[in-house]
Image 1 (cartoon, rainbow, N blue to C red):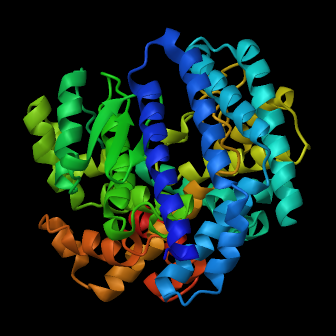
Image 2: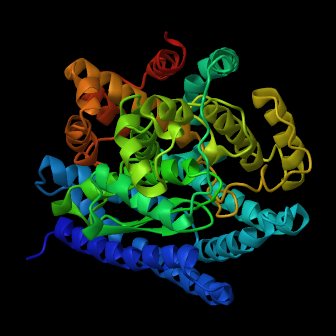
Image 3: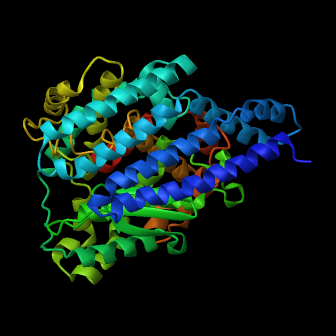
Length: 495
């Protein structure tokens, strides 16, 4: 006789398999689909979102959840049941018509954005974004009524379960104080350095080969994933079939290379999730903040490590030919140049948090009704001037249109990037305490100390524990933003 828990687990497997197909369709939409296919694909994805919502809200689930809670489950099963119930509550808070309308509006807006951004067409983009925002506000209101949370917190909770904007602000408040001074100090120090610039062009084919080299160096399993090209870099698919993308420009190889290293961190997290439990919510990534901690562990903590430049240098010579800029010491200077810029995904790790503070402030105001789409350009211009000293007036493509998140309806996601940077700094502080020779091992190309630690403490943990418990088990303490500040000061100002 099938128990209530077994019934729930079987239903979760079905949801996982259908989500698998949906994820591959979304990847194909971004990487391969011809432009005229978008309306049909958007309708198909909306249909799939509706079907998944029906399955996640079947009336029988309420009784099954209660019955399973009374069964003699082990700790793993109880943790899985906790995650099943959390997803069930979130799904039941939303009407199916809203789920389908949101999916359709998001897909249409994102597809139009791909052409509107290069054209700097804010006037054409704004009406689409207005519809996306209106539906996101409806979603936030329904979730707020269900959970009792503020509207923005209800959206944040989808990406960072249990986290509230007040806690985000508490973590970010010191950052707002010390970051401007740190940017000034680092840029002043680096202005006295001599750096040899690479000489291009750097053909796209060679950059693609270099990206694959870097993925191999960092242990990516090509039997369970691949690298492609898209308008905006991302990591999608499923743990069994990870789909990564990047974008290329032939005058500069670093954005694509570091983008690939970043996405490889996401990909390895997905590939490292507990395979025996795949299909169950407990085997999913814990949160987007934890997910970003993996991409930033790869891109910033490891990829921008002084010794890692020595591992990358031979790969650059192999793909582009030898030149003075590829000498490891100079390459590390290139990897760690700090300069305020317009584009978030190309930002160095010192100025990057300023981009997140800007987006966090604006999107919270948008969802809470304190700002409208028409207000975004002025808010953006003011905050870019305040945080990074840059003038973005009239430059929409490199300003509020540069990211895919808002066109895709992903309000509440942006804080996860800097939370992830803080977690990553904490992971590496813990690794160094436990492995005093870690930096010497990285210099020798022995990266197992990093990957094995992440595998044990983050990847295999998946959603077994809620985030605060996971962080404490991994590092011995709660999220401590001082590790991030210490990391930046050590890397950029020491010596």
